[in-house]
Image (cartoon, rainbow, N blue to C red; front, side, top):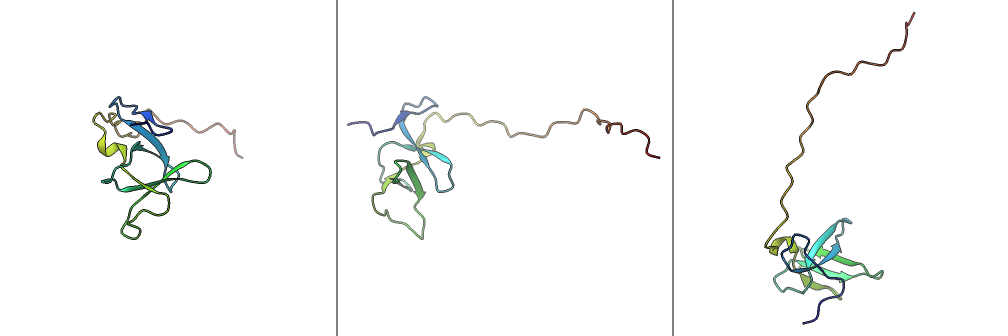
Length: 105
């Protein structure tokens, strides 16, 4: 089997080939490089050569045009990257005094 154009190995070292696509919201999403009939994404290459994906929803459940069915890589990754701890606000160390503005008479 040949490797799809633009595929790279998974950054979390699971060994699978992935492709980076752009969602409708403009965010990057890793998808498996090979088509998957069990996937819930429709992937296609737009006119500028960028790989785009959309979710197959109840309103648009079938593939359209030149789309191929893809699986999000996060759903099949065997070694997902560890999640970062949620950020919490820093504790206040003290109150910063207001800048001196001189006497106001």
